[in-house]
Amino acid sequence: MSAMPTASTPTERKHVTRARANPGGMDVLNVLGSQVRPIRERKPPWFKVPPPGGERYRQLTELIRSENLHTVCQEAACPNVGECWERGTATFMILGDTCTRRCGFCNVKTGRPTWHDPLEPARVARSIARMGLRHAVVTSVDRDDLPDKGASAFVGVIRQVRLQAPDCQIEVLTPDFQGQEMPLAKVVAERPDVFNHNVEVVPRLYSVARRGSMFERSCRVLRLAKEMGGHEVTTKSGLMAGLGETHEEMVEAFGALRESGVQVLTVGQYLRPSERHLPVVRYWHPDEFAALELAAYELGFEHVAAGPLVRSSYHADQHVPQRRPGVGPLATEKLKDASPLAARG
Image (cartoon, rainbow, N blue to C red; front, side, top):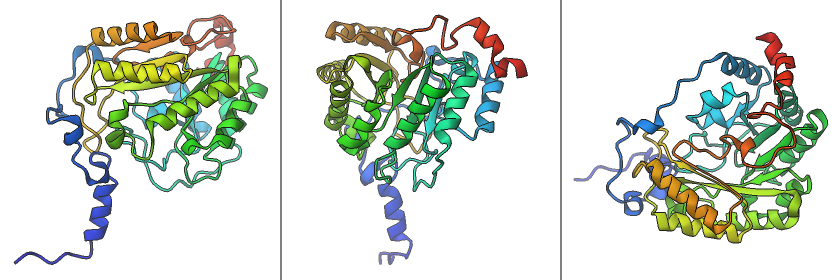
């Protein structure tokens, strides 16, 4: 005799449906293929990076904590956090640390957001000014719960950076705003130096990796951003490799982005954050990333960064021309020495 269903069955079914590793209750191996990498294995040698913990890293950690800010570096478990923070740069994540979507690759927690802080843009800009950045990246969680999808928060940050750190270039890495034009227009009207929106994966993988998003809609967002911003705004996007896509699929996606007016492209390796996330199908070799980079340049991109450890904001200051001299995000050594962080160190 079969067991009677328990009261917890609907809840359990809902949990399975919303799981990152099998979204909608589907068997992701039907899409990714059966040959996936185990989560507990030795990664190829090109993924070895020094653990974070240097002086600059500790200073930046203190600053972010004291200002009650979030960074995608921490929330998404980026492997480059040690290097980037030692260089004095971080990607600030506004609108809290809880996302309304549940992408299969992302380590940011998901749920019902409650974060609302009208002073957050001012605090982000203050931190950017204290760090002496010449190029700052600001992203956010998806906030589909808000009427303008969080666009006003990006507007606030851009305006505050212009006031508090007027020499700093500002790059925004936005959600798709559910394809709505008014939130997008509000952000682009502030003329960020770089408008970035990642398509993340090739179109075939959206059903498992980006449920709730559409590749064509993201391309439209990028195309409209370029049309609205003109020559004043550089458009940028990025993809991950490692979920079973082919070289040809990647290049085809690059072509769609170029047709949408995207100027800067980043391509990196997907790394599985936990067992609850999509598995890695394979690790692309650095030579394969070099081939992708070459193919992208042949399509006409102005700048391409492709490599196993490349992320959308990795060395972002090198992706576009800078108005201020310097190496990395710090404009000058003099400015670095005079910053409050250096004085406190």
